[in-house]
Length: 330
Image 1: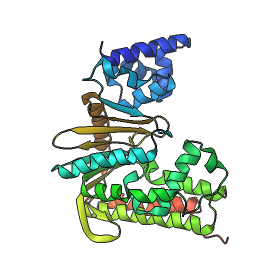
Image 2 (image 1 turned 180 degrees about the horizontal axis):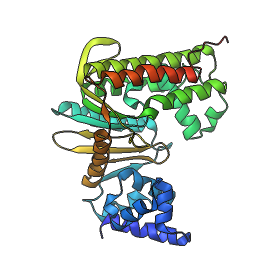
Image 3 (image 1 turned 60 degrees about the vertical axis):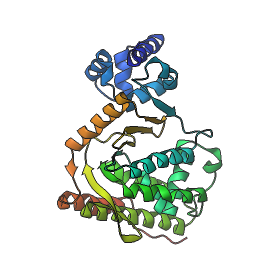
């Protein structure tokens, strides 16, 4: 039996056990209309990969158990970030794919960015440490991080992945951003500042200054249409196209395309990550990213007006609104 049909049958069984209509709960979980939910249920292959992941999480359906049901439908792994498969394991897996892409001509990465793509952060140690701290404290609810303040020198192990940033720079990329991409981290920094979760003003400034630097760096890339190294401006990497779209997925999802294959990375801050070269996952993810691009605005090279509006005017306005330009005494 086709795996997608098996999945929808399990979904019907689960909702029936709860005494609920399948379309009602699908609409609620995916934040879509009931009409859209009915259309997906009638034509289950129209479910996007990230939508299937959300439903699998909600109804405790283990996608890995379905691999044998149709290798043409599903090949790959669904991994939950845990002590058994850590973020560092994930980084190492991604780096393997990046190095393959570098070795093959005309490779490209298409990235739907819910927040600034993680590949940049490893050049900025205080910022990388902050994002790792937020992940462990607020998303994984790790007890050892709930009772301590953030220090810029913490999480030293994050400094070991600069190679990810170097490799990403070498590969041509299309990034699709929305407002949350740029501002979600500002809200995190604001929250930590307001709640006294920075150990000192210097720790706050280290993170804020590095994030500002990173934003300026990505703006410079968009102006040039090329990937750049933040500390060696003469080093030029792959082509860079930046889009602004109101339709970016709620999670960070990307595809690495090479002359031999394509790999989809469907990420969720709550559910884990699915890594697959399966035609279904690649095509549905690629289709969604293309829709986001086609309904967006190209900011790189020719888009000077909207580019400066987002990166200069709106970014600085949001910082002022959140009080992130202010310097406090310890």
